[in-house]
Image (cartoon, rainbow, N blue to C red; front, side, top):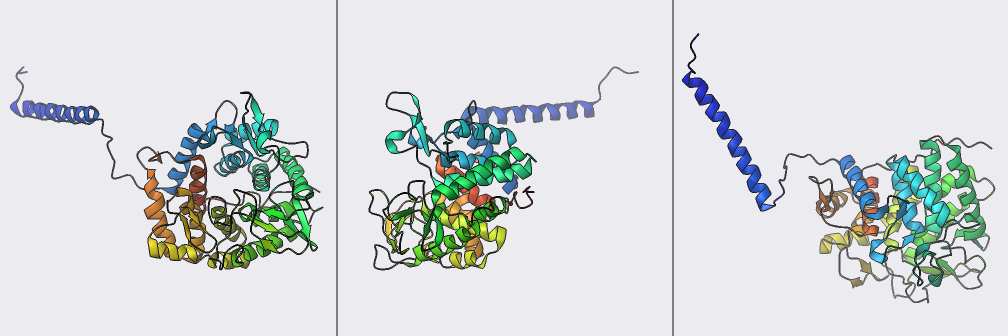
Length: 410
């Protein structure tokens, strides 16, 4: 047999070598210039976005060794709200390890004797850590209490563990006993545990109200009238949106805060410094909470309320943007854009104007996401990270009622 190598073979070998060298040179050039290779063929997938940004959120904002959620924009404090968001997200994505770690820390560090939760924890003036009593951190916040209880109900069914159910029952009963205030025979959920014993007007936060949760509470706490709290929540929300409060007119949006007369139920603007009737940091959660109830229960009241928030459509059509802070008459207070306002407004657009919902989603939300890294392109605040995620998940129908089929033994 001849030992010579044919020319065609040599040509093929040289071609292969040239390809390898060219590929290596390209790789070197990319690395040397420190540029990221963008794969334009990646297909956008909402599931991937939600999973990826959950993983990056855990890395950025959850202390792995303890389960404590850090608000890094506020000196690494921890709030009952933050713990509740982590628990809700963990049960919806079926991350039991994170759920249990977070719940364990919450019980140990924040749960009070009455089973509600102190709202603020962090480093004290003496450099020790604990409940920040200097800012009344020992008091409860009813939105976090309700979100934690709902997360536990969903966990009980998702992971078939009655321990979660029993823990939820204790919280739910205490919420009614300590945070529900009766006005003219009607029970309303107040913003904290102080309002029930006070003689002053009741401090109310519309964005704390979660009718979808109270429907589930009614199934496990038959001692208390949670169905009436569902009804009063809708009555109160409609009133807070339509009344002028401290302005000459209303833009039809819910306020951040409002006071309720404990005898007549009349609403007025808050007088405490820092509490306003603006549609801003707090109130922007209200469309999402109403929207979730509509997705789960198709209550016509939720649809009616959402459709009354046409101010959001007007702002988008007129300005191509939503700003972070509006006065109760619609005047722009702060002309900046924050991601969370788009995430929560999606719930309104989905019901009232699906075309705009797609525009907002594509132009203002998907653009925050990097498909190559499966994370946000830039750092989002703790608050924005949560509410953009919640907004996307609701928009994509990824927030099922995991407690709907929960079996409750009498």
